[in-house]
Length: 112
Length: 114
Image 1: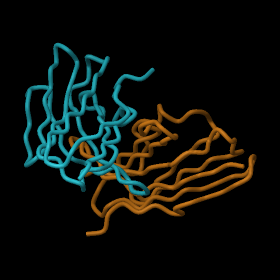
Image 2: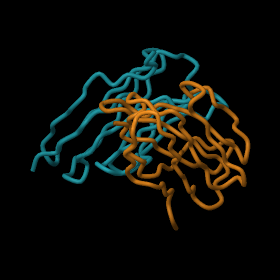
Image 3: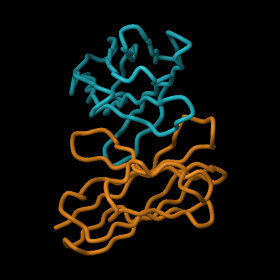
């Protein structure tokens, strides 16, 4: 059963505009959430994370928002750059359980 | 410093054969994970080592899959009697250890079973 869902398989955005990626989860035990970025033929690279005690975490152009009541998180990238074109995975973990449950990914294409 | 490395990068084998996939974690990382990624899906957890011992092997799909980490560093994922459904990218990740959720991934081994 897929406990982490990314319902948009792809997203196309113009350079300089905002990219918003969405992620939903079903397991209310998840308390730590991460976003990974993946280029072709490479492994996923950690991007940003958020603990369930927060509702927002920001790092440069990347901001993650967490809505626990809705079991929903989102990643905002602003401004989007051509190098942001990649597959983005949402992942979640339970307390003291370090294995990650991943969504299926969203492919972002930034148009010049 | 050096990241997580995995060998081979590609492996083609015939159905029924045995394969070994190797992972070299980041130096000093005590936790090591194996994931499997099928086409169009996200990575799926297989097994987690803390040091030399398998702390969680709940993701291994069946007893054809086995992994070891005898000295707490390099790990080998072993697959016996391979099946076509085992074809996937096998990813290895490492982290500093207990309390660290951020995992650093290697480039993966693409396994194709013909």
